[in-house]
Length: 133
Image (cartoon, rainbow, N blue to C red; front, side, top):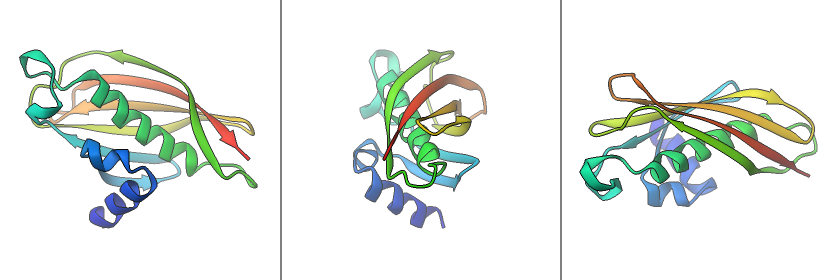
């Protein structure tokens, strides 16, 4: 099942294949993506790069918003994204769990938690997705 979800993720958002993201759970109430720690995704000191974390969160939030589109809409696009980094990810993996915070006719707001392999909150992202008609 996860392989099928990951194939869907990469087909819908090709950058997620380049990033190395995998899909664990996909539904309108929650989308969970994973990114394994890899030295090639790090900044100095072995810290998983903030841009990698933000890209993972954007993908999770975007897919979550897409699954909550109102009738007649055909897609979404990120309008704003605010990230709060809370702790570094230095090993293992990070999981992004996106949930809809508000679903409207013109915008959808997603809240995404990024947790390390020990379940500790590493970052929190709130993003607004425009509804494309």
